[in-house]
Length: 122
Image (cartoon, one colour):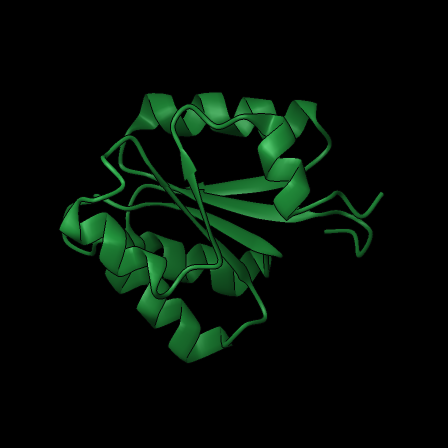
């Protein structure tokens, strides 16, 4: 892991969504890791030390909202949290996540919008 890499963790229970987003981020110069759920995410994040976590709002076991709360409790504002969902903006679970995360993007992710949130270090 290089200090000049911009590190991003993608957390989503959809393998297809994860793979396409990882490919997009890597092609645009980001170092990436992924997790399929909130529990796995906590381990990956502790090891990888990302600058940003892209987290799906709707996941089994631990929702994106719960994961965001856990990350805030453990890391404060040291990690940029971005909620990602295909759900409606007025959905109760999505709205609740807005209170915890720094940004919100809809699927599919537009790389230009993401680069405004988290420019690459190199």
